[in-house]
Length: 84
Image (cartoon, rainbow, N blue to C red; front, side, top):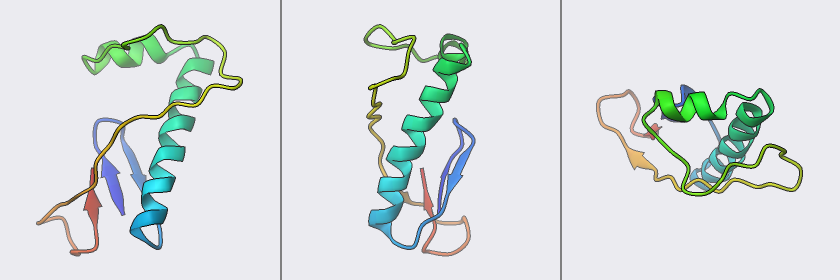
């Protein structure tokens, strides 16, 4: 299980490899949804973030690759839980 508090996303997978793949897919879909809803600029500002490149306004043929890391988090239940 992985939890990303800033994005309010939680994911679960059968293996660490599957989890990493699912995180990449979820981040891509999440950002595309924000663009399609015309909420990406507001979302970035609210988090104190900014884009290093212009954000596309259409998501066809766009793939977001957001760097992330997986870290074991003690004190959050099972040792098998990964907290992002």
